[in-house]
Length: 389
Image 1 (cartoon, rainbow, N blue to C red):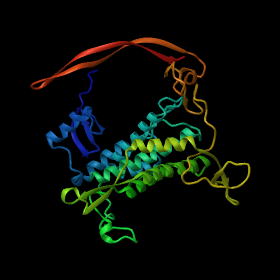
Image 2 (cartoon, rainbow, N blue to C red):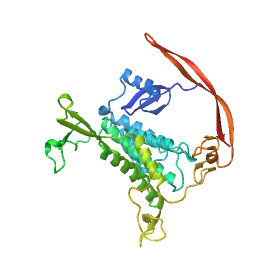
Image 3 (spheres, rainbow, N blue to C red):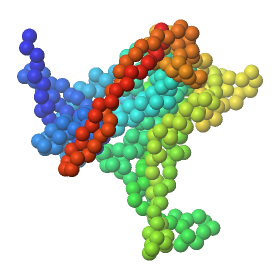
Image 4 (spheres, rainbow, N blue to C red):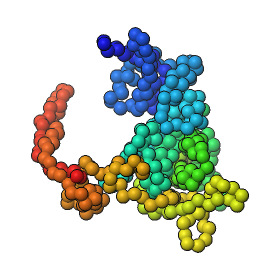
């Protein structure tokens, strides 16, 4: 059978965050998200710009966009009913949400790259990655970092004008000064302050909709979702610029900026290290859990809003386990000389490791020639690597 010849036919949505392309063949059609501005996506973006077939977000044809969103959202695995409806009605926001989920997943991989659990799990890959099936600290971190990532990406999309219902934070206007200060000692709001309130609200609306059933695990997930958003709110920073003659600061304008997402990752990793175990408490006349309390021998103390909470001890993640979702550590690269979590002793769980040799190559001794090209040599070395049995 002759293979189908696919070609980009129409660009349904084009923003700084990504594009939505419609591909057609002689008898079929399919849609493809191209997220980000990386080099590998340049051809698709150039196609949209060169042919001028990418609709500006303010001029989107509702029926065409709704059709594309309906097809994609109906096939996207892992969405709750409300999330699927949200996806179909807000495709512009879904691009930002998708980027936020990817940011959260990548940051999770970075923070746990040397641990037995490296943010992978058995099971179907969804918008939220592959998830564990237990209420452990690792699951708690996953929910918190995803919630923070979505709030972060939506807030950023607002600042760049990629969403139709938000922009800069217009409440940050006028003169600001402490009550006891004179007005001239304060400063003025200026620039584009990020609209974190909108990003947090949209993250709460989308992420919390996953918890359809009232259960102990749902209460845990909702708590950790909120923690991720609070961390973002806490790390917002004030950026200021002075204006005046010869470097003086006769007038100062300030605006609110997002931190780097890596800062949020480190902050949540600290919360992971100090996470607290909780248990669900049922109301007197209710069969369903109503709130969480610290799992202590005595007392009904609730966890703090700034605590990362979990319900059960973590599995050891040494072996693949379909019940917990653990993928195991077999085949993972380890460090034979390390004394940390990435050591072969710890990572391989006492099963031993195998050693192999490979050749690593890279460009070196690069020189710039006028004008205008660069020539490089190729350097290589033999390297030993170790993988868990």
